[in-house]
Image 1 (cartoon, rainbow over the protein chains, first blue to last red):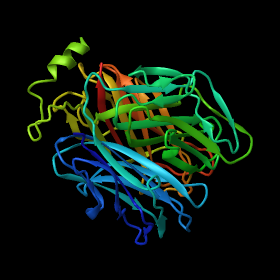
Image 2 (image 1 turned 135 degrees about the vertical axis):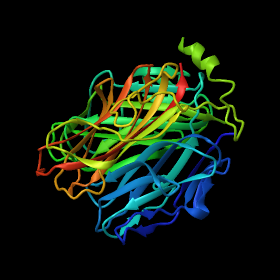
Image 3 (image 1 turned 90 degrees about the vertical axis):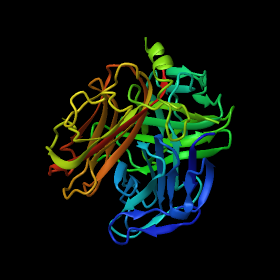
Length: 278
Length: 168
């Protein structure tokens, strides 16, 4: 049996009033294999020794304090990943990913730090927390796709990122013509994307779309500009997902602002990798 | 060669004693926990202090031990790797905007990243999944820019972790 779980917050919550790290509360299982989900304690429990991929996304709602820090904390002591979100306006979404070699019984929590009260959003695809065992073998389906040339997009356009070529494609999952990855083997997947936008822009969003069910598996939302740097906006988007054979996923981006912008080839990638087969 | 090593060498005798699952794991995690200063407009390779784990133990991801800036993929562990990198200043006191955090593969930026922070405090967490061969190196570079209102130095903390997902 697979080892992995995904939980989410079905109710909104307020955190950060003390200016110290606060544990995010979760109350609902999305999927759970081998009893990883532990909503009663607002955490994930890692049931056997092994290397795990661990990821979380958090939505902040409109409020006074926009900037917040997230971190993944193992056994309340080991910080395995952290990220900061400073959305361009009142709401935003951010995600973090880390790996950890755990002993059976280790636990992991999602914590947040904000200077003042921060309202956390609820919903299956808004504030979630997932982990999966991440073993390796020689046969796993894995694809990494990229641009062969730059791609322009315009304000307000919800755009499929036109990954039109491959780094590799084990399992023949990727269609270069449609930029869609079609899952071959049912299981738990790690999906990571990294987009480089040439010119800094505000209110930019990027996400991982489940085209089969018409949902966002992950969405980095309302990213702020970088303050005028020539390096542009570059960000990662990620998730751990339970996907079925034939399910279609892909990467998308959009922004609200003036003029056309360019996703730059070379530094933009998307990857879908089987973590554990069902 | 790699196929032989992965197909034969890592099965049998490496099953988990606890679960008896027969699964194989390869990965690493290294951390810079004590902050240090990065000067304005200066790109710096993060010097890590603490090896949180390397799996299998003794697999020599860190050729120089602690205080190494580079992770090297050992012989037999080439394949599809997922990498997580975190860098920045989560609790800093400095002002300004414009952090850059780079995932470097063999000294070349594979996934450059930026984080804009109106109060100058924050981390960037990035993810990349890519094929790496034995001998390839992985590192995290950080840079702050003089762009915008940035006038202060910053202090760096960083974490780099990875997992081999598919051998080749």
